[in-house]
Length: 426
Ligand SMILES: *Cc1c(COP(=O)(O)O)cnc(C)c1O
Image (tube, protein in one colour):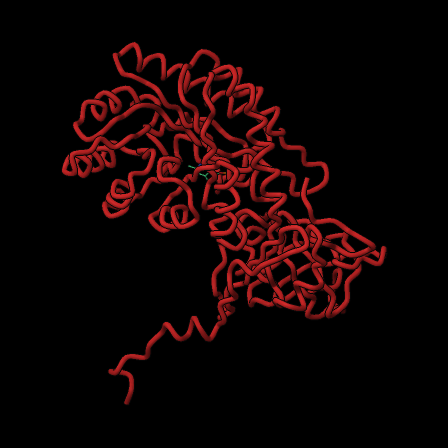
């Protein structure tokens, strides 16, 4: 459920008419709903109530910053008690800047540089998820030099098919992530003995936009078996990180498992583990808490197929359709009740700049406003300046109030960072 609804025939973000945001901030613009973010964080936590009670410990919900790294979004979630799952030094600095306590920060990712590992140590973050033997050795060496023991989990690759888009599947043997299960025990033995490392558990994350709990449960069962084996080998296992991945409905008829159903499965899968659990939800928190508001530039008719509704947003602002063939619902801000079938495209000079083909949608004309829904995760953060378009602005709504939470960056400002060198000046 979100807070982007029709009131008197017009789309509102909470109590703010979207038309007002378009007039005052311009388009395209991302709009986030604070109430929706809060609601999603609470629903996710409530879904894990059974897990918390069974284990006697409150799980850490570390929001996956890569889904939406906007500082205001992170602040909302931090106030809801969430930590942060970060995958770069930049995300780590954002989480801290937004007020996330360092002990609630988890650092994931296969390619953490030495400088990034050092940054995590300097900031005394709560956990490093180590993805290779080499990374574990490097982290141990850096921590030992500071007289520290870095808190860490070993990310394993359970080799399960998450049944999602191949570009966002991360838990198959051929994916770059984690340590293959067959090697996990020996790697744990080696890294667990290193001075500088407090290797205290296991992490897993098999992919994103999962619409089926079964692959997750299969992966968690493998983790449970591994935890038992590691304990048998004398290791002290106190932490398990179960990653993110829960899907969201992008269109009618898509029915991802609810956080409550997920929680029931997790309680079953983790029964008797006796560990601190961490979760890293991204999309399920932020996806439906954001829309991309856009204005129709013109409607071009006369081809073979349906008309082209050309909007002022493009693949550089919202990459998911071009990248993954993803579906985003597309609705008029002031629907008349009339419908049309259209190809919805942006202005960029690539055929890939297509949001939808042969889409049945609200009838739209030049100058009218519309939204792409479910754009709060993997939206603004994937933007580029391709075709020398600027970076889109971001707005957060809170009740009848709204604020610009990221300025529009004009194409001219991007050009200002470029130089023509002296050797080309003659
Ligand atoms: C991307 C990612 C997540 C979040 O995935 P969602 O599908 O957005 O929940 C969590 N953990 C890791 C390690 C990730 O790479």
